[in-house]
Image 1 (cartoon, helix red, strand yellow):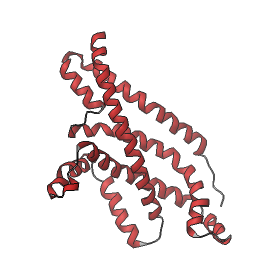
Image 2: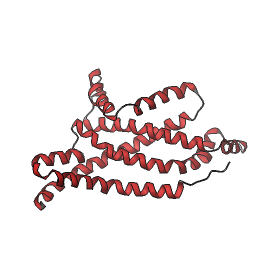
Image 3: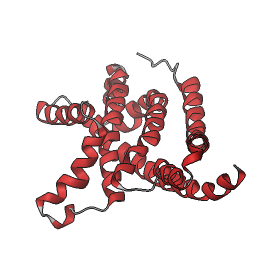
Image 4: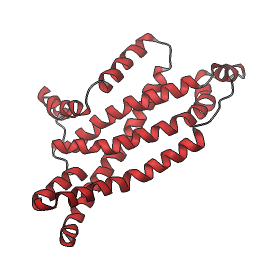
Length: 222
């Protein structure tokens, strides 16, 4: 058993590193896009709300695997050169779009939870709508965003396992490859894989819990 651990651990570690890269890049771009969409969704313009609402519902209402296949297999069929994506960027794009839909709804909900009186008070001091959003509304809304955002990020980290279907040697794929070399040690290898996921996700879960404890009970002034 010790020999299997020694021979398998470096491959699993490489897979964990790829999982870390994909999840980190995805969280960054997905959060950025989601924040923009979420803020736009708070504007009372049908021409903005309907298309963005359709985008969110379409992606949240369909499996991520479909999005991944669409980006990696279907887009190249258009014949457009810049849509001929390698596996890694295709995975990041598909996962970032998926992440953005959840982040957008968290951002929208948090902003709309801030009482209107806050923006009105900022406006009465001479602030523009943009200044009011940046200096008054967002700082308060941010405290409401942090706890649920942590949960989304953990889901995304675990969701990276799906990208193995397009040949990316992330942690699960590395574990599958290891079981082919040691077919009699399935429980050991998948146990090691699960422990590595736990080692990555647990600090994020603890951080989310800390944020929920610290910020979840925030009461906004009316």
